[in-house]
View: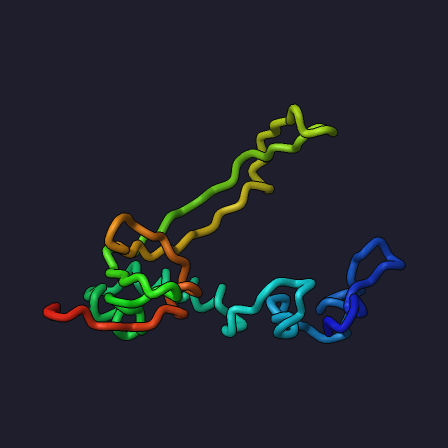
Length: 158
């Protein structure tokens, strides 16, 4: 529940009592916030977009026919951006990222402290981007942005 902050525990140092975010049963941590709730940012319209993106990365990496996989996933090869710019898909980029250090700014922000992370705190993640040509350069779009594109066909293209 996100009507206020009634889903957070404040009397015990912020730690939830047992499994499931302040509930006696297991709960999903990716629960979307209420649409239009400005305190938590806009909602993509697809509550589990992070899970959909992870499944896309796993499937695309092993697909024998990447073009057909993109069609099945309804990723447009030719599309129009919200500003009307025509976009043409050039490539799908999947990056593997590992965070091995952290930077903490000092008070006032003029300097910082760097600390390498111990192995147990290093984090790994994957980033998915779709590179579209817009007539003058390349735009890298996330899956949520690609899903919002308006598919089009360029005259004379097949």
